[in-house]
Length: 255
Image 1 (spheres, rainbow, N blue to C red):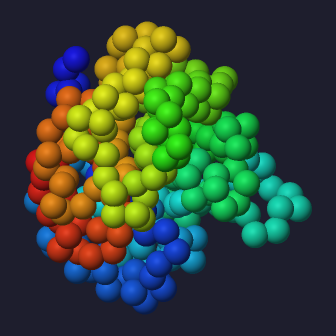
Image 2 (spheres, one colour; image 1 turned 90 degrees about the horizontal axis):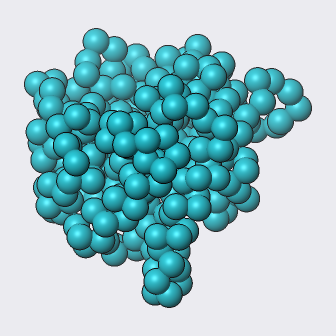
């Protein structure tokens, strides 16, 4: 396994935080702090209302902007939803799909995640696809089966060529917002299961080139140890992405 074949991607997931004014302030603070950090790709996934402010504040920098969800239809009677074409025209390059909070609180299923993923790829967006087990599944020893099944279902009908625009984020649901974190060994092992699943679907070359992030409460204190693991190619960062100094420490660890 040659980790050097894959870029490191550090993505912030702001969740439902920051107004457009606060977005401008935070990104303006962050831009000079990470401007010389070329050892990883840097992405900020912001709320829909903050996209315009984020795109403008990051213009000319090494920070890319992403959204936190996308609908599978190009248009229609879907009140409150946003299409891939809308995001693309706003300057978005990445989108998170299948985050556990979307699955838990808003009824997302592997079937709808798959539809959203294919719509995003068709529009030319890069996707951060989230998979992960809940605490009972970890305790009962079925983590590997759960993440393998999610990966297969979510990628159903996705071509080998499209995989170059898919990042997978392993997010143990029990470690999101709880202060708990998978050990580096657990994170590496489960990211390895995901990579093995991709190899079974698309072959070893694509498995070796697919970026797999860890997304369960990675922060300034544990980032370096997690990112050192062979199957961990970056992080999907929650709370720590809301503080420029903390996020920069994680970006530094990825160098």
